[in-house]
Image (cartoon, rainbow, N blue to C red; front, side):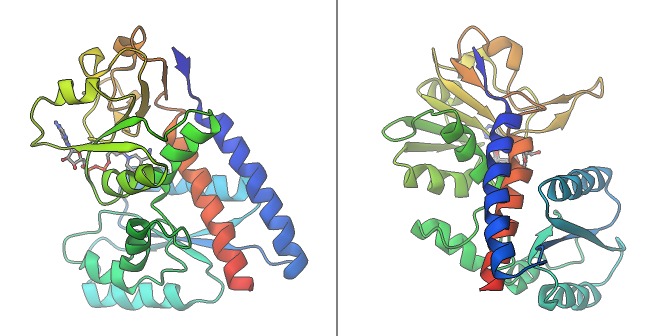
Length: 284
Ligand code: NAD
């Protein structure tokens, strides 16, 4: 089984970002696009993701700053704080860490977010663009990362049976649109899917985005399928793992992404790609 390492895909994207940044420097000497990472509360997963994202942006030659708010902030106060970031001309792109605490009306914030700063594709305008196959918007970074992994490894999508396990707004649904745009024949599975293992076994490309640790084992994988694991979990021994039981599929899959070191690494690289694109638009 071929292991599809995220680092190699990320390095390719880094090169693209470097080229774009050089062009940007010609247009606007000294301008380096800045990402605002907006976090409410101190959830350790968010803090760790934020730290990784800041490191990645800086490593890619970009800027990132975290904007934090207390967990018990009121909806109105958070909206006012968010509005200031949204309108700050020094901020080229925004990443809002979710879920937000219950008192905050998440949908209102999604709708407020300027589409041109919405690097993770959560605003209605960007969602509509994905649905329309219009690539002038931003798709959610994780969904786009899955397509990047396949393309960088020269795994064709056109005409292939692609099965996605998960229909969330941030991964499964937008990914189904991106895969259709690449001419894949897409099946989306969820908690009410009957015969999930049988449906998954039909897939030539299987994407696991169910959010259940090691749920998909060899019974879900057809012979020689390509398996992309989006899940990120910490198991009972404190180790990172995905939605796929990696060891059990080794004799069946032709290729698979590991966790850690797979899709997650590419997701932050896609975020950097979106940030430089937002910066170019801003400069224009
Ligand atoms: P989610 O919980 O919002 O959605 C999970 C989806 O899977 C739902 O649509 C649900 O119907 C489906 N599902 C759940 N259990 C199922 C089952 N037993 N059978 C069939 N379908 C089932 O999760 P999400 O935000 O889409 O994230 C999915 C996974 O991806 C999580 O593990 C998350 O940590 C990870 N994630 C990774 C990245 C990354 O950068 N790699 C980014 C975002 C999310």
